[in-house]
Amino acid sequence: MNPFQTAPENKKRLTLIGLFLTMFSSLMVSGGNSTILPTIAADIGGMEIYPIANVISAPLGLAAMPLWGYLGARDPSIKRLLISLSVFAGFVTILIRAFATDMWAVVIAGILWGLLAAGLYVLGFSMVRDMYDTKKAGIFLGFLGTFQMLGMLIGPFLTGIVIDLAGWRMVCHIIWPLLLLASILLFSGVKVTKEEAKPLAANLGKFDLSGAVFLIIFLMLTILGLSTGTSVIPFGSLASNVMIIIAVISLIATIFIIKSKGNAAIIPISVIGDRNVLFLTLTNFSLNLANMAVFFFIPSYMIYILQTPATQAGLATTMMSILGVIISPILGRAIAKAGNARTILTAGTIVRIIVTLLFLFFLNPGSSVIFIFAVMFVAGFYSSQTGVTFSTAPQIQVKQEIRQQGNSVIQIGQNFGSALGLSIYTLIIGSYGLVDGMRISFIFSVCCSVAALFLGLCLQKLKAPEEPAA
Image (cartoon, rainbow, N blue to C red; front, side, top):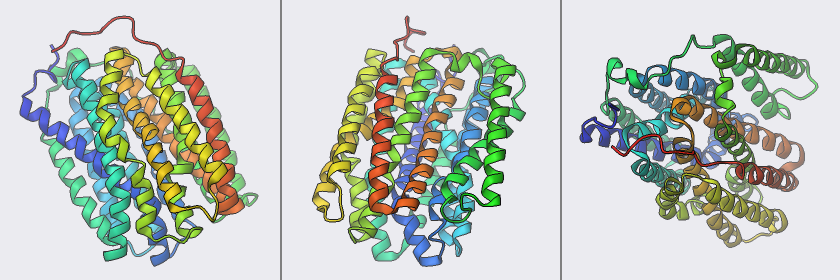
């Protein structure tokens, strides 16, 4: 018997509300970062380092994802505590940002944000699947996509308005109470004992600490090296060369550990050897690598090249979220019904390619704001599709015995793709400027999207249902 599915309905509701609120708040932050971070830097200094604040969370988050996946698989009863602590770390991040007087405080506090991503995307999605059968899980995971789109819809626009009316600190004072409340709700939600969860627990060995250490060193130095290569730590300098050497050594060590430890490695061989886990991970990585050119830098382009106010720049990202509020539950239900995200993933990726090509050929310093709003509105389809696909598909298309760890690997692809993409685009734009740099970034983004299109076609439906409805 699954103790999560037999838990009291009021406890399930608390967990769901906590997850919905976490998703909404976290997307308000990420959606508003492209507007608030340059504004903070202009106010307290640090224009040369502000992009780092958006990627600094990636190394800890990426290391925490396999750890959270390992702990959640070994003892599912601990998921509640890990999720609530992860969201609490997000609350601390925004609280520190609210009172920061130096950009480095914003950057360093951002390290903790990665724990929220690990808790939400690795454990939160799987908790929904734990609590409900396939059909209901698909619906609620679709609603998570709705709250994701709501956060993206309200966050950028609200950020711009509040910045213009009351300053950037007020934005933080609106968000941190939401994260604190979400943490409390999740802690008060579904609770099962270790003994009750034992039938669902995976028999795992010791956590691969050495693999985790080398992985986080590789990720941190790669992301920081690319982000600072044209500013704080210039390419060719001694510090930059040392970072590159250590990153390469750490990558080689990580690969060697995975190969030698097999299923006991930080990324288990049996998990990445699963067809759907592998192609969901590669597709998630490719799409998020493609995504940051539009998601993060279009508002910057509007502020610095088109000279639009922060409110309009935030509204551009808001336009990208309108469709998702409506269609996210529909997409989640469709994936659950089909048992395969391939069709919806293909459609979304084609729209992504079209949108990026429109920006590549028609975005210029004389572009109309209306043109940007219209294209960003269409982009909302693939934005919603991506969010729903990678919250729902792993719970539907990955075998139960590897689902928890498989989900962590798939989400690593998402976060690493986002962080690496942001670092690469920061490097390109830092080298060529916003106008020429954006064109190069769009070309790179189209290539990544085309790769994702073919990778997504390799997904397969599971051969048989795993369990009856509760």
